[in-house]
Length: 156
Image (cartoon, rainbow, N blue to C red; front, side, top):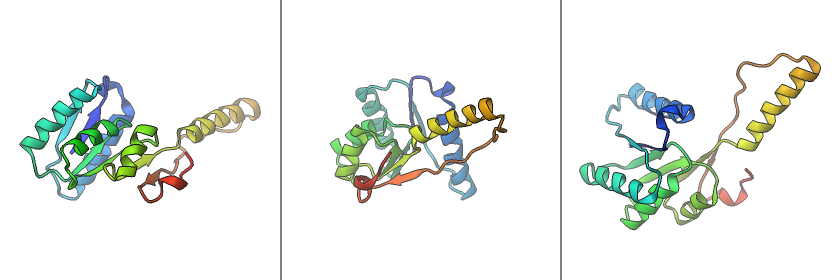
């Protein structure tokens, strides 16, 4: 299951790109039964209501991928209903997510090093304006996969 939790899902381009990539991967591997859930109210009770409804309707769900940092709200519900059989993946190395990662509720956090992204962008602009250095159209940044076993050593 793919879960988007955002008040502005249609205008959050990063969420849309993550969703497209996720669905493309499963389509390319002949897995077409991906359930897509968009939750526009970001409070916990709304998340609980939507996740609960889907898990009752589809009790065989084994993986939930949350496309942003609100994965802790899904983790809170997963812990409440004691669904240890669900693999939970989300984004961002923030306090709320780390707590559920430590407990083993969140299995993987994907981190994109936002400070490094900002630094690279500002340095590129500076070098272009100051030294007339050509700007690279694309600059690929590594992502980090954080687990319960390695989070203590991670520097964001």
